[in-house]
Length: 168
Image 1 (cartoon, rainbow, N blue to C red):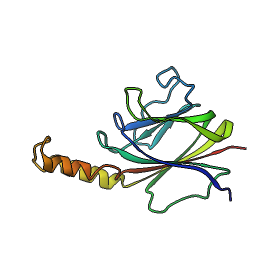
Image 2: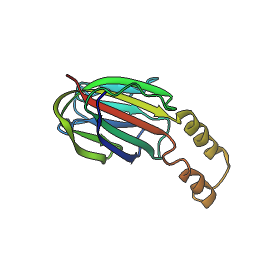
Image 3: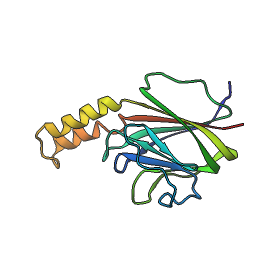
Image 4: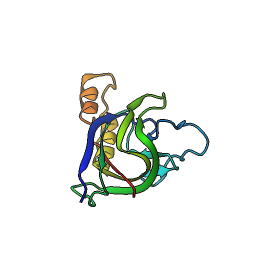
């Protein structure tokens, strides 16, 4: 079993219920990019991946891990899993909004240039959807304290784990 080389935990603010993971040298809006995932967790192209989220306007928690080798399959309460291979030039970027902002800008990967195996896990999606729907059913002023406090409790509830390792 390989060892974990990098672990980074960050909030991500999904735009239109997705965030993008890609090589920083790639134009995320260029031709040949992945389409928005429908009824699936991810959609990929050679150098980028879109991850579908259950909500928007509320941050989700993303943990990025780089491993020496493929880590053992993981469960620990995660509800869904998807796998892919991405070509990365030794760096990784996570875009969380349509404005070109990055949650992670050009994170240096220990594995260098090449194909990376990627696993994406998620948890608390169903609970986040339930609570998000309840937020709008509470008949409170969206600008009022009660609504804002309930919205704040949703921050980071939906969680994503992205594990990657250099393919041999």
